[in-house]
Length: 137
Image (cartoon, rainbow, N blue to C red; front, side):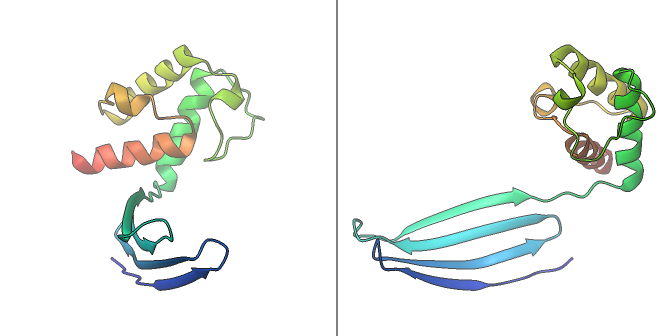
């Protein structure tokens, strides 16, 4: 586990805004961003936070997902698949995506919730989800 902390102070003369960004932390596989800003129009400072998930699925998982996508969409061996390949770029419609998810569930012996399956658009997203589900079990 690694942690990275940084602080950034920015002055913008055009909008007379002072921004302070603090605590950019990487802990495990998540990033937490916190920013504090004072704007000319506001009396009180505003605090904004956001959380990003950074996942790097295992290479074996990405490869298995690629094989399943290739099989489900009947792609030729010459078709290049990368982790960033979108199912829609391969001609997949919503039914094809459901069949891909069903193939992944069968292969990895997992159950993918409907709301999670709707967010899968690339091979990498599918592999990341699978690794998270396998870790939970």
